[in-house]
Length: 312
Image (tube, rainbow, N blue to C red; front, side, top):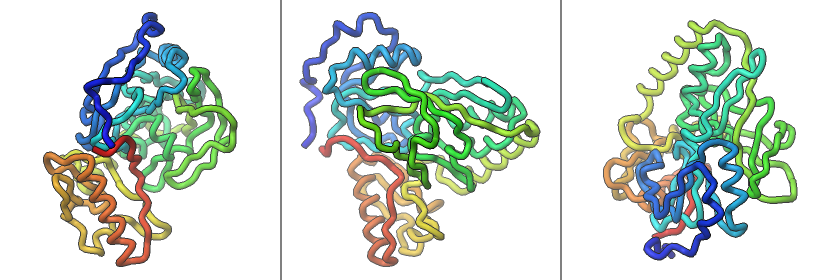
């Protein structure tokens, strides 16, 4: 059942007078998602910086639902919309600096491509793969994003998180269960929390060689992925010893279309917005692809994409 955005629930404004970020009501979230489709959010908040984010969370009513969004490249918000507040982290938590020999501090809103270029500029090796990930550090930490044989948490020394009550925590990789496109905090009583930053280690390298590797990686990405149409990157995780794209293509699903959503002819593990797609079109196509592959191959593909919100 969809929510009525014309009559938003009562929201206490007074405690937010001292904040420096931007609070907006009834927001079209398709503008903030790489699929360029989806419903509206009751409100969004773009914090001015980390301190402002903590202050905002402390001021929120305790029952207010909160969702964090970076570049919106791994997220689908259903057409009925999203209750509560969306934290817009991209361009907000953007601090990126060296904090030691080979150690980079990157806040949650830093895009992967910017991190890769920064490391190359400082003659560090091992960060090139981040250029191929269409997301920000917060999302990359949350799903252990990766490409071309490398993954985010292989480089993580420490992370910083913010809890629902606005308090910050420092955590080590040992406090998480980390796998392929999978990160779960180990049992810890308390409230929800989100990644706000990470310290990553890179080995000394040749900056010019790293920049050339980044250019080659981006060329491969342009040649193999449908970047000319709105998409959310790879839709399904690769199953053990196989590739989701190969399985989808083997089932004859390239070009399969529901409404404005289509399985890319260029890369079968991409679903593109071919024009006017709704979130329902995309979600229904994800379901159809998954069911077809399961029926024809016996393999159940698991989505990488997070789907939230109410159906229309």
